[in-house]
Length: 385
Ligand SMILES: Cc1cc2nc3c(=O)[nH]c(=O)nc-3n(C[C@H](O)[C@H](O)[C@H](O)COP(=O)(O)OP(=O)(O)OC[C@H]3O[C@@H](n4cnc5c(N)ncnc54)[C@H](O)[C@@H]3O)c2cc1C
Image (cartoon, rainbow, N blue to C red; front, side, top):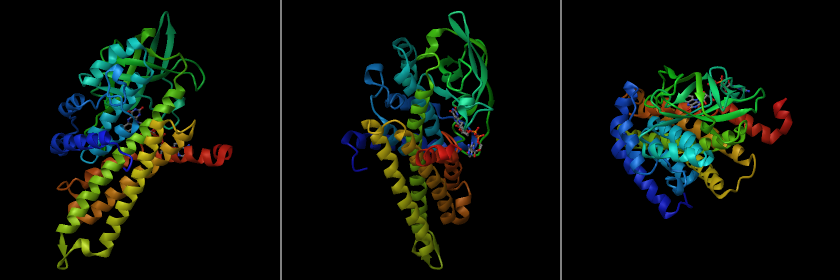
């Protein structure tokens, strides 16, 4: 992007090299076996990526949404699943503790999360509360000086293998009575339930978190009781713009493979890239990727500069996420078509990219939810009738 600083370009080069050396050689096997690349996750810690948005004072890299999106795009171009786990750790858990935690909470949890010794995740979704997340039923009931946590979270990225979770729970009767707690593996009453076997993002473990009467001291509540909805929404905005970086990465990876293939593969005595119908797919993909790149990094930059007021951040992030996610799926499908039979096999990565891209249209809010956010801004109350 034209506004990337020299430091941001350096970060881009560093993460691109890391993805090439560390992630690319391992992803096919991990995707097949539904494993997790813990070794490379630890190396992300050495590179300073795991606390990318946490202030330097608190041990992080002190960077913003633009840099986090750069990291997502560069890693997402070769391995979207490990990148999704990275996002859940760095943006949904570590960023939130850094932004909202007390001095003691930051001191206690951030060092191990930023080094990679511990892995983080975030628990918002529940079996009965997905798009309508404020209908969550996980409850933190007051008990003496603390709380007792009961309920189940589902679809939690890093749930099966994570250590520290940023968990939302109800502390009152209304939809807005949401509080946040830091829950650690090993606490009495905590267990991880089912691990899901997925179509894509297979090297990013997803599972349930079960809270069976966990006794939590008040010192593990983040922020005020009942005061989490606004911060949850702000984090969703950051999640949506940074996850768009993964969509960009998937699309770029698929375009690179398809372009090379169009040069190499010959049919009817010519490279298939000389056929206008192949050129149409490649050029549309490239132009659409470029458009999504602009809206995504522009939104990230505006968030970093504090230029988006009130709900503007939610609307622009929703627009970026909606378009980038749809673009990634379509571009990956087009890449499969360009590769013909090979595109449909595991000989090339484009089938994996298509499986991974589909999650971009569901996770962090579905396409339909993004359209609802945009429609509410355009139509006001009429959209909610
Ligand atoms: C791989 C993966 C990783 C995830 N990681 C996390 C995580 O780390 N933490 C976490 O908390 N959650 C996570 N999620 C959950 C994710 O955010 C939810 O799946 C998503 O918000 C949708 O919720 P749902 O699956 O319950 O679908 P539902 O809300 O049940 O929606 C089903 C369908 O109905 C549509 N729909 C719903 N309401 C409306 C409406 N009002 N108008 C029109 N259409 C509507 C939806 O768009 C969708 O098409 C993850 C999910 C996946 C698959």
